[in-house]
Length: 96
Image 1: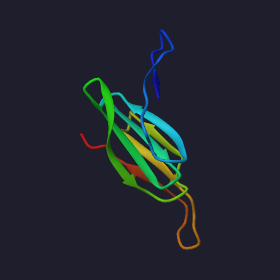
Image 2 (image 1 turned 120 degrees about the vertical axis):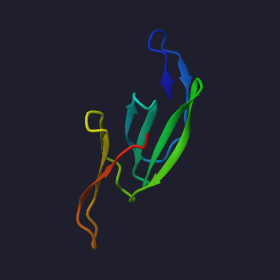
Image 3 (image 1 turned 45 degrees about the vertical axis):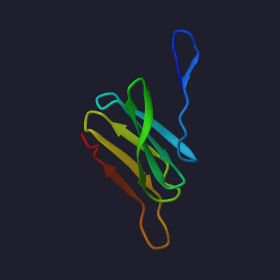
């Protein structure tokens, strides 16, 4: 949901992936990144006066903790270790 900071009124509501942990705004691209434990990152882009989902990026179930760093223009996602794979940090570079 987005709110008008001067009035507190709800402006918009978006349906995103389940088990969301982190939400980041990419001001340069007018995008929102939502990392979710269901195993995806939802990407919303500005479409006129509102936002719409422009991508759903598959990740790994349980990988919900992320960090978007505008200075490096990267989204970092923490991926838990499994019986067959070690823990990892996946790095995503947003497209223009």
